[in-house]
Image (cartoon, rainbow, N blue to C red; front, side, top):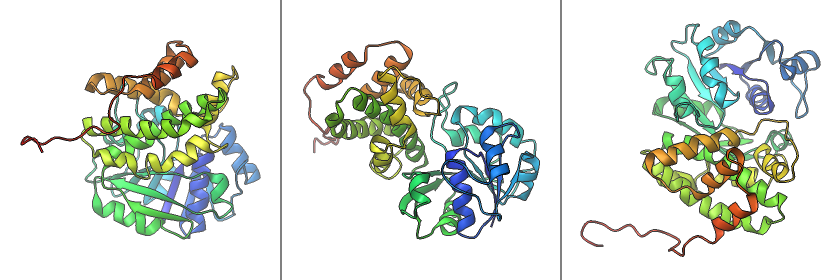
Length: 329
């Protein structure tokens, strides 16, 4: 299969490396003046992996798009709309777009597949998402993991799972695009909260954070029309280990360094996602205490330790809300 991976950052380079490794014809594309693209082009390696000669590289977006049967996009989620403006100048009919980033557009509250849907006719250019746990540092060592591909087009996601599956990554068919996207995006916000706990030496609270974070995101998924049980799958709860505990997680590291007064220089998608999810919670009247706490600490200057105390002294309630049917059962 001919695949172009747009984006040469940590995850984009890993995807290109992986898809080449399992036998696909891969082009890696990035901005001509981006340091990560220049390093890969000139040195054929970055801090995580090395590119074999079989991976071609280009900064010409039209060349990358024309090559591809499948266009994989791995960039900052808040830049997707701007990037799609350029991508959509090319003929995309018959191609599949796969989004390998996790976020919600702050300006509109749209999921990333919806952002792409503003530019393409999905009957001609289907859109899928690739989500779930994993770090390049593990994959290049041959440590396997499980991930999810989801799409509103069942034929497309079945095709992608079959084409992308290997001993290194076992793919599952997603069954809830809303839940897959919201769960994946929210996981990064919970990751920032986990990093804040680490930075304050409250690491033992991360178990409670994991459990309660999953419940609140399940409520949001349901309010948006998705299946709340998606929050308990690979896209959200299944990705917690990689995000809440790994030293390689950008979001966890951002939270840890934030409370220590340090400046984190790399991309932490959960920062802007906290703003987007906070707004969605307000619009849909969903109680999101962890999301709200992270948002108010990052954007309104709320005191971190006071915010944590408020989270854990909330009113006593049942752990799980009992669902009662109309007949009282």
